[in-house]
Image (tube, rainbow, N blue to C red; front, side, top):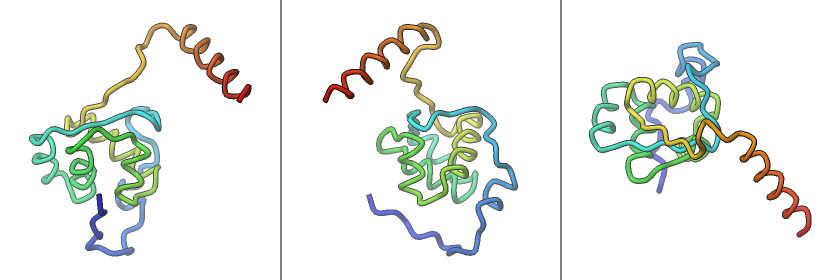
Amino acid sequence: MEPRRDPRGALVRPYAVTRGRTEPSRDIALEAVMSATPTQAAEARFAGYDKYRIATVCEGRAQSLAEIAAYTRMPLGVTRVLVADMVAEGLLTLHTAAPATGYEERMNLLGRVLSGLREL
């Protein structure tokens, strides 16, 4: 996917895109996956240029927060704030990979994976 060129050039500072906010309205993990339906992408047109770009990236297939930042060429912090806003506004759907319960089981699994990687 070829990224679109920002018609504003390099003139817009990251804090201007987020209106000075540096913290997202909700915590979204770097590997969290978002998607957008065609309806959500169409609605994002009216939410601003950057939000529309994010929605179009997520419309074709689900993307992680890190992938969205890379494809849109926006700083990760800015992307995190905008994506959190979009999830709250219903312009993106957040898909969580792990259930809220079972923390101990997940930690055990991660420990076993780490041990296996060290043995390689």
